[in-house]
Image (cartoon, rainbow, N blue to C red; front, side, top):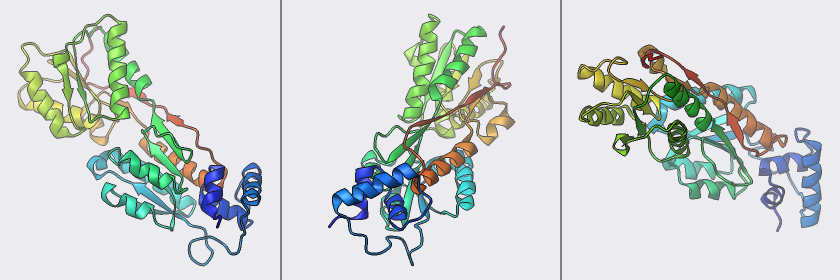
Amino acid sequence: MVGIKDIANRCGVSPTTVSNVLNNKNNVGQKTRDRILETARELGYVHKKPDAAIGGRRKNTVAINFSDFDAQFYFDVLHGISDYAVKRDFNLLICTKENFAKYADSDSICGCIIMDWSTDDSTIFSIADKGIPMITLDRQMPHKLIKNMVTSNYESEKTLVGKLVSSGFTSFAFLGGIDSDDNRERYRAFRDVLRENDISFDRNLLYEGNWTEKSGAAAARLIMLQPRMPQVLVCANDLMAIGAIRKFQENGIRIPDDISVCGFDDVIMSKYLGLTTVCVPNYERGYLAMQALSDIIDGTGNFENFKIGARVKWRKSIKPLN
C-alpha cells in the first residue's frame, strides 16, 4: 500500500509537508502542492484520514542532535534555535549522540537539526531516508532531505592568517582539533596563505588537539620544549587557544610579547582574555537553521546549501610588528 512517506520520498519533501497538502492546509507553496498531488495520483494513493501526530494536529517536535562535549560552544546556537521555535510553536527535543537515533526515529518528530560532529553519518542518513528533513551545522552531507549550513571557515581563516603575514610574522605553529570539515578547512586556509607567501612551515610545529582547553595546554607544553618558539600559535578553535594561553602564562611566558596566539569561534572567554579570533555568529545561525527547517516542514523551503559569514576580531593576543 502506498503511504505518505512514499510520496514524500518521490517528491523530496517531508512527510509532514505531504500530510499538510493532503489535508488541504494552506501552508505549502503552490508548486510543491501541485507536485505532491500529481505524485499521489501517479502512485495511486488513497487518502482515508489525516496523517498527523495526536488528534489530527500538526507534528511540531524537532529533534536537536546536541553535543555535550562542545556544550559551551553550542549554547548560543541553541538560544537562536529556541527563539525561532517558540515563534513558530515548535517543541524541541534535545538529544545527545547516545539517544539521538532512538528519538529522531519517533513518529512524533517532524525534523532534525544536527549539531554533534561525532554522530555517525550512517545514523543521520538512515533517519533522512525515512523522510525526515534535516539541517546540519558545519557538516557536508549529500542527501535530498538534508540542508547543509556551513561557516565560511576557509575564507575567514585565510583573512586572519593573511593579515598576520602582512604584519610581518614568518614563524607559525598550528594547533588543530579533531578531524572534521571545520578543522580541515581552517588548516587548508592556513597552509595556503603560507604557500602563497613563500613561508616555510615546520611540520614539527603542527599539533593535534581535541577542541578542549586541556589539549591546548598540552600543545603549549610541547611548544615550550622547542629550541626556538614560533612567533604565532594559530589554533583551530578558542578553547584550545585559551588552554594554551593559560599554560604559557603559568610558565612565565608573556602573551603577546613572547608568543602571539589566535583562535576561532569567539566564545565568551575570548573577549575577556583579549584573544584575537574569528567571530562566528552562533545565535544567528541557530535562528536561521530553525527558520530553514520550519520553511522546509511547511513546504516553502529548499535543501540548497547555505554559508554563514564570519569575521575576524583583532585583540591584544597578537603582537603588532609593522
